[in-house]
Image (cartoon, rainbow, N blue to C red):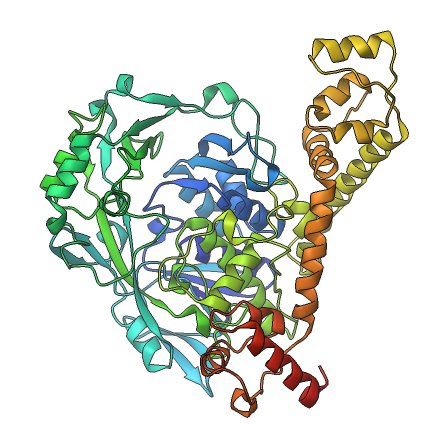
Length: 618
């Protein structure tokens, strides 16, 4: 008998199983193939725009994705470094062999955690509460809670042109019956699609026709605790290329052969990570599309064409690849494919990621309608924490939209649902100036400590960082610019206009042309780079950040107006019929959540607010 069973060994499953075991639950991770734990069937990168911030948040809350990525990547860079701090995030090219190996070692060394090979095809239920799982061979394994993290394995089908082959990624065995059995239990099932590009043999690539893309010259980590595990000058190069007019001609001439445009796809694909044929059809005005050549591993010679996902037949893929610069003689080692799979309707989840239909059943990752390793890992972490909390009578950890991208992700899924694979974007977060890469630990590490996922040593490190930030701010406030010959010379050397009057260094730093490195020329600041960068951001954007917090306070006031679970929306007169239907379907926890439901208008909120005050005195 286990406390917790996690079904699936992908990125969601790894985080869920690890954190459940760390919190003291006797945990079993059940996967169809141990060799595929933390597999990267798509591009083996970790992070990216907004996604890199999610990885930092996972680490701040005690998750393991960031630590494993730091130990296994061969290139890392800060995206949008020339833009404002709200949109900066890390992206690392992880090694496809090393990352899963380190993840498996991490799981194997986690107390309370067992890994079992098997295919889960059903659940055992008593009094509408999950009590375990049934494997394909009939074996029943009992547990107090179950987390489903099935990825693309639920009735997965590989599509290449008109070919439709049942299976998961790499042609692995799929789960044939679990989604049907979930449907019988009352869960709504939808069909989604994603895909991958061709893999190319390294020795057949002419890199001289491509633009080099190198890693950053600064050291970075996803983890708030690990020191950098790499050398800047030893980072692997990636390369930039573009599609050609010939590429577009080939695709347009063969659209009817594509699985998508040939009518062979039934699932809905990701809007923000479309296939190359979809890009060319949707963006006809674009003469070319950007592609990146990235190695999959330092242990073998396959390269990945990021941005070239397709479901064209193999012969057309050959023509497409050979039309690209540097790939005229390329050897395709693995053809691209689309994959369809079953997922549940995320509107049937609570904010805790527990299912509304079956008690103690949680879901995380692609089964919830998301795309991406990072989104999956975030949900796995939260579902693992909340499974523990549910079994121990503790209030669930619900991250708010102003606290974390993870909070935005889960709130979007639970409140708005999704009919296509959901991808996190900075534009989805209304408080993105608060939810930055640099302050993930300042935002979330204390929450991790309070929820038992961060130990005292790491918490103490957070407190030391907070103290250092305050110390530097006080130094800047208490020291004025000295307008003497020495400081005037420093201004001249930096080609910065010399101020006509003295101000505090704190106010001086607010000026756009003044950096924290310039301030260091004026006063000794022997603090770590991350401390000084945090101070620089907080000082320069102080007014904007204060405004964002005020906006967040308005939202939180609506969040505080809770809606009883047993409310009957049919009793509320003057609600629009669409609003009544949407509210009944989502059953929001608060007026704030209700306000974010598509189809619920301000007039409906007013009616609901009056009703709550009248009947429940809320």
